[in-house]
Length: 317
Length: 291
Image (cartoon, rainbow over all chains, first blue to last red; front, side, top):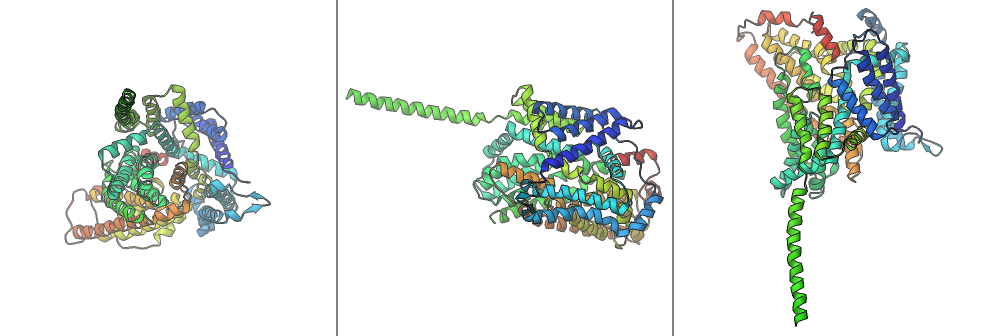
């Protein structure tokens, strides 16, 4: 294979290394050492993650969490193009501005579909185990080339913009991966087994409908606790989904996981743990922190019922 | 006789022993499920209630779970490290497009998107939000999740448009109603994003689901998972759109000229949030650029 997913890890590592370096050298950044250090550690994990001892990576992760917890990852003041200069650009480019943005999904889809035919000699062009992700990465690189060509800007400038966005997103970029890691730790520690034990010994799942309700409602509740469906998914699917819905009732696994994850998303709509969606609207100057969740309840609960019905009726497909 | 009896007795004794062993083993198995790892879940809840940084809470939960199992320190750290390295695919989807999106924003992608969206002239709050919901769900389904979001789309664009629409239709509106409309705008963005992105094959959740099933010995194509997300996505649209339609009716009843309630907050409302949705306070502008 010619383009493997490891190259994407290296690319991201390299980008983070540059971003971290830029922040470290920026004298105007309020916390350049802590912030810069945070991104540099993250870069090391991407560049050498496969070769570093797992214990050391664990220490790195704890260090990153401590830096984030101490408020060390803050953004510098952003320098954007002035609105006058921007409107000249908008005037010149018009709807062509959408082309690079649309290039990413286009290349992803085309790459995924054509992957089996893309060969040079005996070598497969795209990593067959990660076709979509590799196509997506390729799409980003091609889109960047198109964007530089259209805007007549440079790759260096795009790195400055990456730094601006990474800086403003902050540790929230790492949170999904942290939750994914927690999900794996939970699953190794047997949290799934414990949850499955609690549900199976107290709830009688001899009826298909009960098992479906336990899986969907469990996904929603666990997501509310974790703030993210990603961490709830391995627990509920490992505890109830695979052994009971798939093992006993022969559910179609694709239907099961798709609807299970969406049941988790109903939970996301209901929890303040999903701060980036439900609390960040503070930028809207709402006096009640939970105003958005209050609006979302009446959508999330009926949708959860729909999910239960859909899974029950579609699972045998 | 004796020998036979002995054998019978032995067999009987063995049988009893086996029954007792089975009983004890069964009891043991029942108790063998270790409930201590659930401590990690409690840490998550406590961490949230105490409003700690989510990243720190997640790390603490992982450590607490390890201690509860119990694992030695070096194993806890290596467990965290291994898990973190294994899940490196998740942030790729956030980090890789930043260079392109950043560059395009610098050249006015947002301004252009705003101009383009405002060409869709709709008369009511509900219809505007339904149109946005549809657009958000469809673009997210094509992987363009970055086109929305609270700081970059809802605050500068959607919320002011919704409030403007309400003002055109109902005249001056109360601050309370403004807050309600902003909450609806934010909620609509969330619903559109959540129930659109899971249909995009390269989205992290789909990668996670397929990887997890693969580890459990079940192989499923990512595209199949994406397709089976569509029924729920359609339900989500129908439910939320119905609510927005009902919101219109409710607003019409309460606010159409003739039954306009007199509110002392009306005057305050106009000052709070100007037409561009950007308030004058520099502190708040800082807050916006942070998130």
